[in-house]
Image (cartoon, one colour):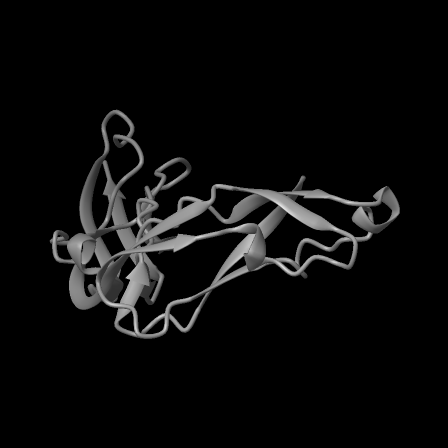
Length: 178
């Protein structure tokens, strides 16, 4: 058995794959051990051509005939044998940045000002996710060791949803006073 990478080609620019829950398939082969030991998984990679695809679900059946193993080697099984992809329209919006603070200020201190620069960022991703968003959170701004005015670059939080930001970081200025 060998793990073979899955690759997508020709994805229409207005679509994206929203359920890439796998990046490999297992291919079982039978043949002479000397030949099997020389097989490169990248040479057998699964390439799914999405040219002309439309939003919705696309199914691809992977049979042993899908692969071209070396002479004398036979593909006996592919797992999973069916790959189902969900394709969704891409949306782009400008949304305000919301600064998240990591912990409460120390006793006797309060945050008197918080500012993100830029205040708006461009968000790109699956329309169902992007259209649901009202703002973009930063990763937590940690207050430890902070006094007075502090300025720090902070990354934006995608929440692992396959969303990209432009820019992907903002400069946060925070004032902590007694």
